[in-house]
Image (cartoon, rainbow, N blue to C red; front, side):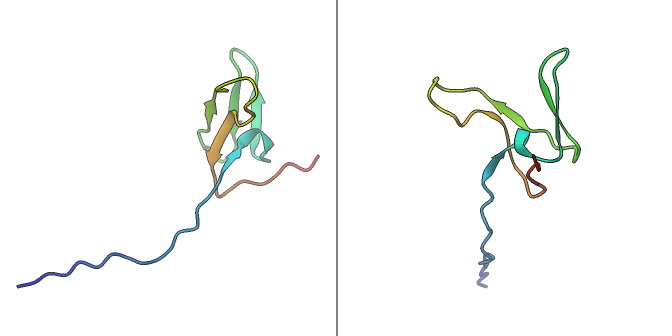
Length: 71
């Protein structure tokens, strides 16, 4: 008996990590410590800067519900 397992060949679209503070669903709470609250109940992570010139730090998440704020 031979069993042949086939893997799905569907391609997934890669979501890019986005800054949550730029999202319509995000609200910053300053006290008692700075926290980002997501209206979609997501839990974004805070990424600290590696060095002072790097600008890819902040609250980030891979999110399908991302909507930019209209300012």
